[in-house]
Image 1 (cartoon, rainbow, N blue to C red):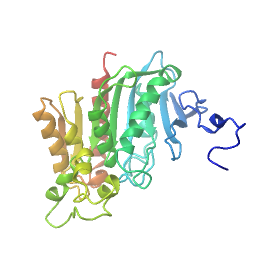
Image 2: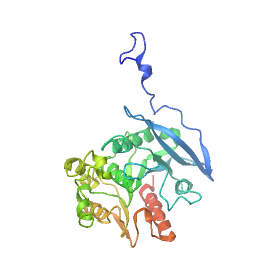
Image 3: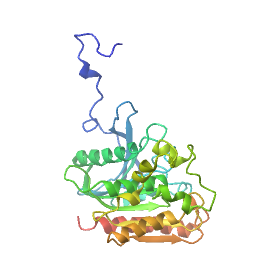
Image 4: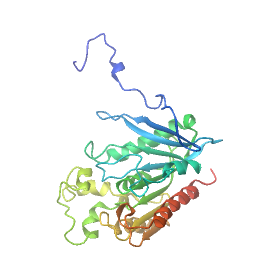
Length: 307
């Protein structure tokens, strides 16, 4: 097939459909009071696979409901859109169904991984998701003026980056708060935050290097632009930052850096450092893991109250 095609062929028929008007998936009922629409297409980036989102919705809402956007982790390289990590896989009902039972719509999106496209593709995708949610808000019963970002690990990084660069607009969802769990926030400072000799900014194969398209030492401007701390300003929404003190994959200091930057910009972030906690909440008790979830849910309620 040639690029131009036969003169009589309507080439516009080859264009992908508009995700804003595609039929929504048939809903399932995974738990009492919950509707699940799995795999709705929200964006089709040029040259890429269609991006999809799972939507956990209150089954019997009487009006538009606030939205929580959960962004999965996996080093920007892997991961499943509906996976909160090993400490939550045995929950029944699961964490997103529980949020829907609490009156939230929960959106769990795919995004382009670093093997598909470098930064800023990932935050571009999340911005497209926020626009799609707003476009489909009437269809889905969403109050997108009350949206909270939430992510764990690399997903927390992307949630924070989106919340800090996506200012309130009338044509898209408005981010009213952000929750990060053990997230990297200042990529150039990673070598300083790890024990001496552990992190090499010249390594082109690190997760961060793969995200920005080259070793951090060779791409300092890209690393800075991909760091949430760079984008903190007076418009930042409220933040809840949770991080374990014994995290061996993302130094605790990374969350402290973002909290410090927010304070310097006049904000009052809620920073919680969990004694003995490792990445993915490994080594925390079940009680402490449940408390992390409860704090996240309570924060989302506070950010979206009174809508």
